[in-house]
Every structure is written in structure tokens, then in C-alpha cells.
Length: 116
Image 1: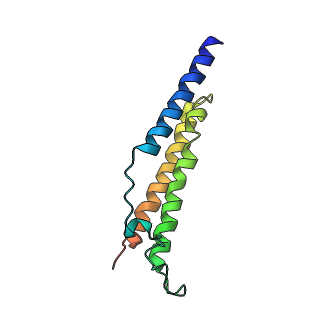
Image 2: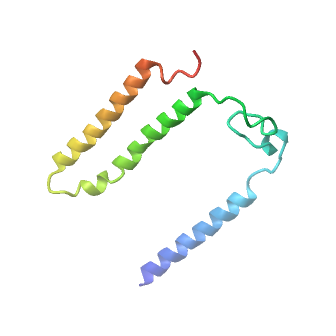
């Protein structure tokens, strides 16, 4: 019980110290660029009916798609406790090969080019 209390005390003290340091350490020098809202490159005070670039949507969707690999591979350390580690390795490799093939396909189709 003594070790648990010590760990709780140390973690609480560390959290409080880090919170105080992060509150007092940064320099607060706001300028017009920092105070203006950022709306995907659009002027926030302009018209809301401006045409939106489909390239931005494509890049955003691709980011979300390839970012899901973290969610798919996150349970891998726990799945490694299964009776057959080779099966776990096979499934993880299959997911990574599919994601790599998708990335190569998008790259070959020019989907990652921001400007033409």
C-alpha cells in the first residue's frame, strides 16, 4: 500500500508541476496573425459561398484513411499474447501491405500532388 501511495503522490506532484510550468513558461505576445481565426485559408470576414478546392478534401480524406492504420495496429501488442504469434504477424503485415499499396496507387494517380 505504501508503494501505491508513493506512486500516486509522485504522479500528482509531477502533473501539478508540469501544469504550472506550461501555464507560466510561454511568452504571451499576441499579434494580429495569432489573434485572427484560421479557416482553411479563407478570409473569415469574407463570403461563405466561395468555391472550395476539392484537392483539400482529397488530401484530408487520404490523411484520415491512412491515419486509421494506427487504430488498426494499436491492439497488436495485446494480440501478440495469442497462441499463434505468426498469425498475428500475418494479419499485421497484411494491413500494412494493403495501406502501402493504397498509398502507392494514390501516388501514381497523382492524388498527392497539391498543385498541378
